[in-house]
Amino acid sequence: MSSPTNKLPSRNRINDRILDHPFTDYWDIFILKHQHPLNITLHICGILIFYGLLFSAWALHNGWILLVLPLTQLVGLAGHFLFERSHIDRQDALFSWRASACLGRMLWRVLLGKYGDDIRQRQETLAGYQAGKD
Image 1 (cartoon, rainbow, N blue to C red):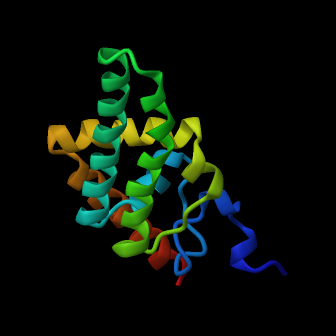
Image 2 (spheres, helix red, strand yellow; image 1 turned 45 degrees about the horizontal axis):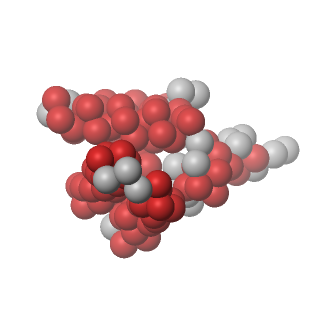
């Protein structure tokens, strides 16, 4: 018989306490990995710094500024290490289209004031799933 840890690919793990969940869409998993307000704030700061550097490189006609772009990842990673001990997939931490798309979607949902509702909905879904397993 397989253990619950074998049910999920490591890329879809939320954290070390949640070994099984009903989510197949990465957006749902992403939300549960990004619930702490300070972690969310640091991720948004990282996004804004990233685009600020891109704009600066363009405005100043200085491509060397682009060499700093990978360091913007450290801002978001700091949020995970300091405030939210969720699983960090190495590929998503370095670069993945799915994580980049979710970061953009998170920024948009935060600006619309709807990200808190997204968190609550996923928490309720997870709680219902876990209650049904007991």
